Amino acid sequence: MNEYMREAIAEAREGIFEGHGGPFGAVIVKDGKIIGRGHNQVLKNNDPTCHGEVMAIHDACKNLGTFDLSGSEIYTTGEPCPMCLGAILWANIEKIYYGCNIVDTDKIGFRDDVFYKRLRPENRGELLKELDRDECLKLYEEYLSIEDRKNY
Image (cartoon, rainbow, N blue to C red; front, side, top):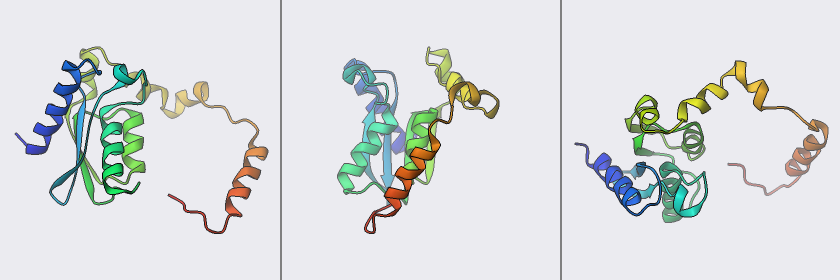
């Protein structure tokens, strides 16, 4: 068994036996060292965004003092949901290793596949509606006027 996946599984076990949430744990590795750890804490925090991958990203960013995790990889017990996949991409994590896939996750009662279906182009119109674009474009212009802004 891969040593980093072993650590991700240990994170998940800690969370499920503490009653924090589902069996989802993750570790982030850079240059052969674990820089972040996390497990699902949805129940503990009453927060649907506290997935294992997101918690590991929070931990790694805090530990390194940066929002840019370029050069790192994540090991996670379950295939990332769309939210976690987005967070992983925003963090610039370069490789994802996962244990169970979304079919496996569905079999234990989690509904990741529903979200993938809602995000398909043919289904997005039911979910996403553009509103007050002109006013929001003015806000974007204000942002662009700040000389020392830092994009991420």
